Image (cartoon, rainbow, N blue to C red; front, side, top):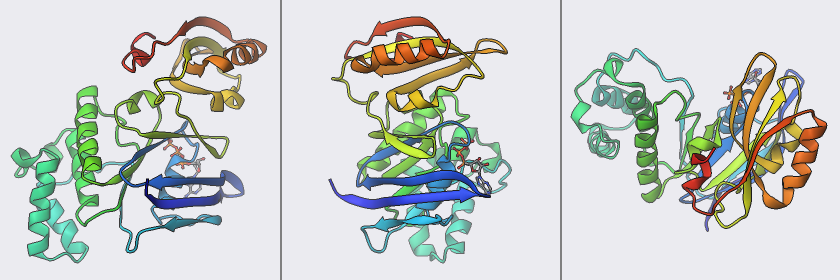
Length: 292
Ligand SMILES: Nc1ncnc2c1ncn2[C@@H]1O[C@H](COP(=O)(O)OP(=O)(O)OP(=O)(O)O)[C@@H](O)[C@H]1O
């Protein structure tokens, strides 16, 4: 598999507070990689560093392709763009110095891929959130792109819009694009991510629990005090869902490896957690999430 970017020993602090510490991993051609972590764990910061928008304090982003082009889509989608997608993309292309006979075919191609041909004359301000998100991604792809960086592209979309956007991203991957995106929950990634990196405690762990369908795993549900930290256990499980039961207690659903199960249960009991359910997972991928 061809490496396109090596992220090497990246460290970043803000105002003396460590956000990322000695992070290294590689991105490969034709892959969708997801960065998962809690609010404030440093996902956006890492994406901006990879995109060259923020400088790390130390470490390097080594690109294996020259020239290397990156399309970056930030988390916030502007809501009141009075242009149609065609006008908007045309203006954005001109700002980047693209010429008309290069721009128009590219816009047509993107409207096709993103299934927005029928809405090319509608104002973006009248679009749904999913359609606005698509336009933001299209503007990042106006020029030929090696790596697409998406900050929380699925958040705030209803399940239908999420699956529609996932289909488009998979189509782009099939056409040769590499994608790195951030996400709060692994649950949203079951269809699109080839690899999941989990940011926790300023560091990145690769976790293939959800993607490796041959490994023996359990699904575990526990209740734990909101004040109790279990960050030390994060590398050992994939959090599928966290919800607040009441003002004092969270309900957490995770997937764990069979061989880690006893250790995790013991640690959770030491943290005064209450184990609600422990079930083996069948090997079928569809079974992963449905049985919680
Ligand atoms: N420009 C900045 N100046 C100071 N602190 C910053 C800056 N950008 C981010 N931070 C801090 O760095 C930490 C990581 O922020 P970041 O936005 O990377 O996290 P995140 O995982 O993307 O969060 P979210 O899921 O909420 O978007 C946070 O504590 C944030 O307040």
